[in-house]
Structures are given as structure tokens and as C-alpha cells.
Length: 315
Image (tube, rainbow, N blue to C red; front, side, top):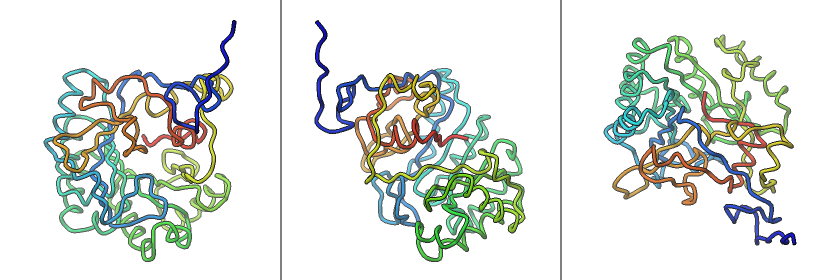
């Protein structure tokens, strides 16, 4: 006799079943290709819809240190985890006083490095700028700077990031381009346009600024889905993989993890995802090897950003 499906009160509550009682999708990691380092949640901006709620006062994730990152990189090498790329995110990475040394360490070990930044004053200060140029001279082929530009117009960008946030970002972007850095742009679907409309708008801006970027290339211009938590989103069941013609390997948590240093913690913790920093259900322990365990897609961001949105933070 078939059992009736068990009902759950509310979406994204049970790690195994959806609200309709269907089997929830999960992801088995197959390798650790990308390790994200959250350098801390402090940022010089307070964006309206920041994925991780970074502000000039939010230090819920405190500055991670060079030695703490080095221990993780040592473990990845020792355990042969297949690590290829180190991603640095925040907050604003250039606000962490240890950021340049940890970036240099990652590059000197032979990893590719991807830095997410708003390219504003923290990056443009003489000390960080000079140190970044030195790393560029040594490791240009493996260092990519991804600049957050939420829209190709200053109006929409500043509606998200605040007044006077456009011109300094453009200055930093032009400086990076002029000095030969590998660049990409992180845009967002904020204005109700189609992706084609957005790419056309960015293409015009790139031409005006004489940037070496191709707006049709998803590596040069990553457009992330809007993460409006007030809108309803479908849960992902095991049957969705076939329906959507996708594989669990397409999802970011199959090959990436993020290290964070919680305020007051004695050591960093490893999370399943860059977008879910405060949900303890996605904390996978203190070690990279131990974090390589199945992840239940039990958060709205799993649907909105990764599975249905088709996005990934990695390069």
C-alpha cells in the first residue's frame, strides 16, 4: 500500500521533503574546484539588495587572516582536493588589511584568483593599488578582477548602491583596464529588462569607455538574477533535474565551498554556498575535506539563483 506524502508547514523547511511532500533535490560534491574566501562583511557601501547584507557597520563575518587562509590552502594541497580557483568576496575585500598578502599567497601557489570588488576607494588607495600592480606584473594570466556594476546606467546603479557610487567605480574600472588586468563585470537583472537588452546596454557603455570587454561573452559580463526574497519561488525536487534538463553537477555547491570567519569564532567555518552565510543549516564544519558532503537544496536561493536562475559565482 502506497504511503500518502507527508506535508510540511512552509517551504524550504525540511531538508528531505518539499512542502508538498516530494523528495527534495540534493547535490553530491564531486570535487573542490573553487574555494571562496569571505574576507569579511564590512563594506564601504550599503547596497539596497546586497546578497550578504554587507554595510560599513556589519561585521557579523569578521576579517579572515592570511594565516587562516594559508591553513585552508595547505589542507587543500595535502588532501589533493583538486582546488583550481580561489575567489575573494566580501564585503569589500580591499578593506581587509590582510587581503593583498592572502591574494599573493593564493597566486604564488599556482591557483587562479578571482577578486570581487566595487573598484572604489578601498582598492584605489595608494598602498593596495601599488600592491595589486605588483601582483599583476607577476601573475597577470591567473588574476581576474570582477567589478560590480549593477546596471549600465548610473541612475539604476546608484538606486542600488547609493549616491555618488557610479563615478568612483568607473574610475577604478578604467584604471584596471588601462593597467592590463583581466576584467569581468558583475551585473544584475534589476531593471525589468531582458538579458539581451542588458547586454546591449553594457556593450554601448564598454565601447564608450574603451574597455577590452565583450558584453556578449558571459565570462566578461556575468548578469546575476535578482534575489528578491519577497517573491515566491518553487522548491526543487529530485524530479526537477530531468524536467529542467539539468544535472546536480551544474549547481555551484557541487564544486565550490566558502570559508567565513564568524564574529568571535576561534577559526573559520566552511559553508556550502557563497549566498547563504547566516543559515547554520549550510555550515559544513571547520575543514575542507569534511565539508565535501551532500547538500540539500533547502533554501530559496538554491532555486532562485542556482537551479532556476542558472547562475554561478565562479569564473
